[in-house]
Image (cartoon, rainbow, N blue to C red; front, side, top):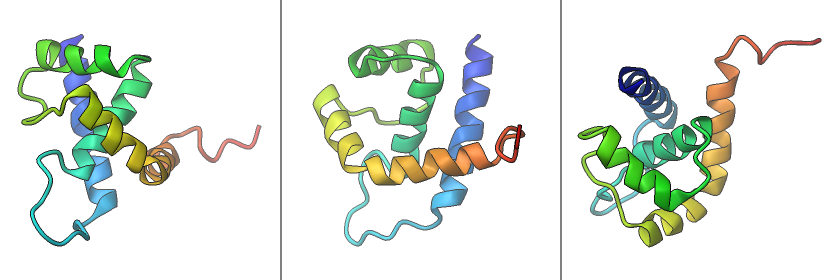
Length: 105
């Protein structure tokens, strides 16, 4: 199971990072880049984990080293809420790569 989740996270990260392109912010980069934040959020939804606190406890224990920095629950919530429009576009970009996207039935 862990190898499958690692593969999923890697594929999601590569897709989202390529889709985002270069960061547009000036100044010091955040400890958790947007691509990693969006990967965490999309993987959480795909794996059906409803609780953000449970998800943030799951990741370091089951996927050590997958994310160099994980914020606390309040920091994750704050960043995630601010990134909702970006998250919606990222989910759409990932969905467009599936075989089901052009399904007309």
